[in-house]
Length: 444
Image 1 (cartoon, rainbow, N blue to C red):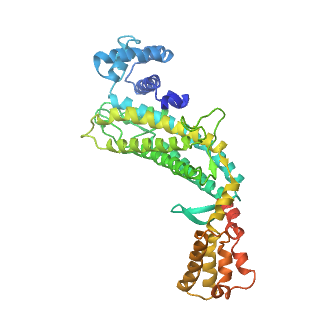
Image 2: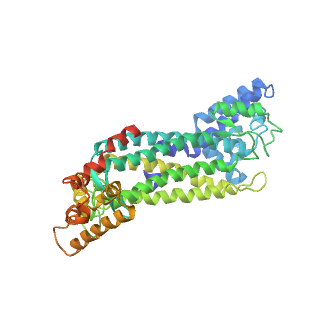
Image 3: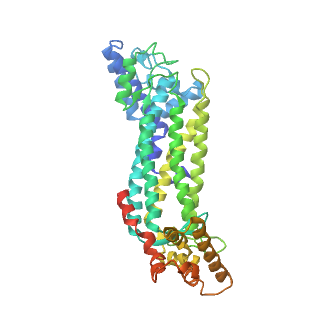
């Protein structure tokens, strides 16, 4: 599914061709650094470059040959170096992979791929945020009921909901930018990380040319807590998708129907019930967030390796990193389209506001009574008594249930308020008076 729907630019990063292209780039950068150090003769470097150019010109052929060799060698990096060496003069090819171990190539290339992926994900968020901001400003003062425990609380606005969403994905952007720097680390320090056969200067030159920094210290591999942090970041960003998937799935319920995902022309909602318009895309995003979370657990399991290195992490990473990066990129594309076309129903929001009969003013009245000198306990008792009476009127099937009217009819409450004071307190405007200020603080 992900390969079918994810975007080509992200998929291309995790292809075998791109991986081997980066491997070859690292090998040649190392050879050039060794030539500057006087180890590789200039004539041999020229022959290596000529052979490498043939490989760069046809990475598909290089990949196919490396895979063919790997069937016999049972080693991907040796299959690769052998395939490259076939394109270089025999004597000059002896300098290929000089002083390096497989993980020098694999882990450094892996860092490049993570950075490339992070760059795309960062652009994804940068594309999404203006869409959310536009919808938030559009509904800045669209009143709706706020809920806690799924039960009516006090009024808010739909714009504030979306402003909260914008703030959460702004944090996602910060996290992705941070983790991009965390993973931008390579190593060419040899079989156990001691730089015994390749100087730190060569390592630094190669890493800097690739936009990476050399690991301060490593074993045969770059330490996997770094990679786990990357995967945990993707999972945490994915959790934001689930957060809003759950929110909008609730808002699309028939009994609520305050917002709805787009239902496109020709779309069908159910094989059995032609009337259905289901929140399938929000449900898909909710489910895919779980995949990201599961992959982050696998990355955590990769942190503990035997001694200076084993390869228990390798097979896992070949699955979870391409899948998670392409998956999150796909999710961002879906979410951007969803938010751009989100259907919003202000009339239903107003209708739902009325379902709690004005009792969303209970705290306002409570605090007003406290200001007038009542203890919190006495004020709470007065307000709760009238709220429960309002529910009783409602449940009795009467149409005249109204919290404000019940409060007015309670002499003990009315004694504390001047004419018109309760009415002024029990208004939607009272609850929304700071909305504009909140938007200004958020920069929306």
